[in-house]
Image (cartoon, rainbow, N blue to C red; front, top):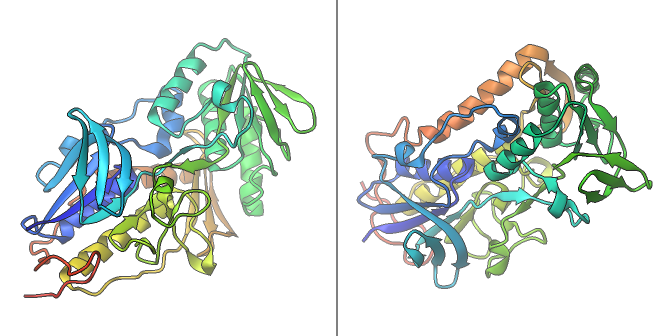
Length: 398
C-alpha cells in the first residue's frame, strides 16, 4: 500500500518539496499529490516586473512534473482536518477530500493591509499574479506626471518603487517608509540605494507611518497627505488563514510551529515550509518570510520525510543567510552580504554587476522549480512498510 504524501501549494517551496520527494522515494512506495489552484508556476519575486508590463516565461506545472510520478491536482484548498488526516479541496470536480499519511503545508502568504483604513479598498498589491496584473492595468492608464505612492520600505517596496520609476520615468513616484531608507543595510548599501533613488527621481518620505488610504491620496501619522493616483501596498505579508483554523499549534500570526526538520511540533505527520512555517534560524531568530528562507526549508522537510520513511538518518542542517539580493530596476542592483542570522556586514555588491547577480539568482530559483527531478538518483530508497504510528520512523531494508 502506497504512503500518501499530499503537498499543499506549488510556490517555490511546495514545488521544490514535491520534486525533491520524487527524487528520494520510489514511485511504487509513495503517491505524491501536489495541490495548487493555478496551472502555472508564479515567479513571485518578479511580480514588480510583471506590474510594469514585462513578459515573464510561462512555466506550466503539467510540463514540469511530467514523468516524475507527482500527480498535480488543480484545486483550491478549503480546509485541513489534521485529526482525520484529510484535506478539503474545491476543483473541477467540485468539493472533495484528499486523505494523506504525510502532509506538506506550503500555502505561503499574501499581502497584509495591516488593518489600515482604506488600504484593502484603494491600494494595489504585488504579492500575487492577479494583483500585479491589476496594478499593471492601472499604471498603464496613468498620464504623465501623475503620482504613484509605494507604501513600505522593505525589499518588496524598494524593488517596486525602482521598477516603476525606471519603466515609467514620466510618473511622479514616491516611497513612504516607516523607518529610514534602507536603514538595515550597510553604509555602502545605503549610499548606493540613495544614489539610485535620486537618479530615478523617487521622492522618499522617511520615518513616516501611513494611517489611511483614499482613492487619490494617503494619510500620514503627522496629519499630512501624500497625493496618489495609484497606491502600491508592500508593508509585509500575512500567512494563509487555513492553518489557524486547524488543531495545529500555530503562532499568533498563524504560522505553523515546527522543529528543525520543519515537522509540526503538535502533529508529527504534518510538515510546514516557507512562509507558512515558524522556523528558527541562527541566533534563535525566526526565519524571515522570503524566497531565500523558503527553498532551504523545502529541502529540509523533503529530506527529513524521506529519511523517516526509509529508516535513513534524519538530516538537520542549520539554515543560515548569506546575502540579501535587491533589484533596483533592470540596470541596477544591490547585494548586501549578511551574517548567518541576517544582519548586514560592511561588504556589498552594487551597480550593474549586482543586477546581473540578482537576475541569476531569480533564474536559478525558477530553474530549480522547473526541473524538479533533475539529478534523480538511479536508485531511490525504499519505503518498506507503513509507519506504525503517524510520522514514526520505519525500518530500513536493503
